[in-house]
Amino acid sequence: MSAPALGDLVCVACDRPLEVGRVVGSYLGQRFEVDLPRCPGCGFVYVSEELASGKMLKVEQALEDK
Image (cartoon, rainbow, N blue to C red; front, side, top):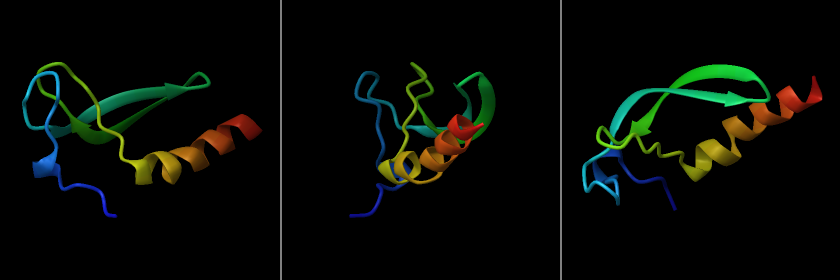
């Protein structure tokens, strides 16, 4: 199953379509910025399963090894 298209993503709380925007994240004291789908109303950020179990997992493991 593939990830939904950006146009298909709607915030459940605000009923607004998600828009790609700059998001600040942090993990183990490391701060990073990335463009992700987010709600322009409440700021909810959508992280796809593919991103969470792929790239983010690799970054998490690299940071924990330091």
